[in-house]
Length: 470
Image (tube, rainbow, N blue to C red; front, side, top):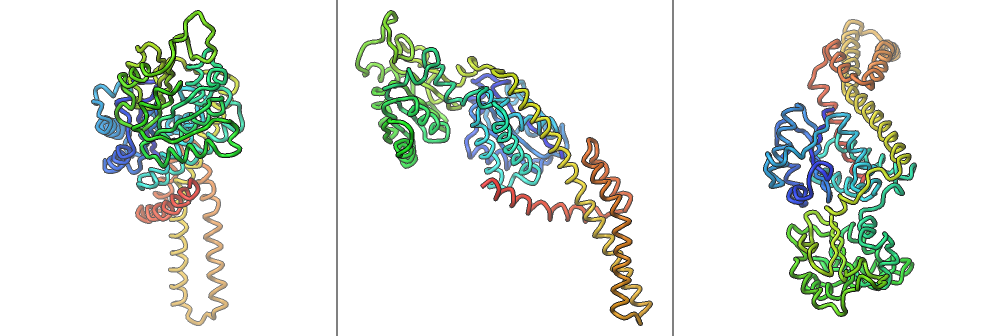
């Protein structure tokens, strides 16, 4: 296993760099294909979220792999390599596994414990499978990461240690973090109909907003989200309706709170658009000395939560009277890294155990093709020797011939049993990768025969993993 990760996140790069380096779906696909075209890599997957961009690859050379992956990441992101390099981190082999498992558990998230990352990891795996850039190693790795993340959330209180990015963002808008008290009776505008926008719409509806307008480039998706919000048993009384993107300025003037999370590459809401909406709104600003329980803050008539990367809402909105904007940069400054130390420590222990188990399984799997090739060679020797014996002793009847064949096979199996079992055990230990090489050397195994077994094993595993992730 030669797993390499090269990436940048909110921990290593400012939002301005993350924003410029963000990758759309087509760019991720192109990047994964270009990684495979590069000499050092045989597998590739891209994990891109609102606060991280990571490139995973199976490489045969560490330094060449780091150089190639960094160069490709810079080329596809549009950020110069010299500017990007200081913000990049590199993880290799077990450290790379540890990193992804920690990410899957929410330990590396802006808000510790948030669960949205599991869906994003699943999306990255699905894309790698669709493009056929994820082979046995990355399929196994990402599938296991999903299982580790689910285990962390089911066995610990990490969910309570942090909150979803949506909830955390709304708490930054609400005075004293009281989202239900602040949201009650308000009109909300949700721009986008993806997973994050859907979560935001549902959260606002549960918090008590009176109406949710959903705008999306594809109106059918907005209509679907609006229907979900108004289904019987949804647990709230909010009304909801889908609107065209062209109607956003009008809806903006009627809204009290706006959540935006689209995949647009440019601004969705400019400062001029927001200023026009503020001017069109009825009523005066809430005076600072009055008790305005439903206002996000004194003087705020329009509150924005921008969860997109790159940003949907013009940063200049921060300077508009009557507007309050919470975006990814604001959340990064407000987030806390260790809200519940005991749960975080428990998750870290789970990650450590799972990394060790994954490494042992991969090392054991690495020697399996060699063992299979050895047993195949032994079977060929038995067949060859029995054919020679038949030529020398043509008078043997079928029963005698079958008994001799069975005896020879049992002798060979018994001789090979102990060393092959032991070599698998040794291969699963740290540093055990060399046992496969030793076995090939001792028995003079054909490297091509071993490689053929590996290729035959790889395709069914990939297909099984694809079915499991569906």
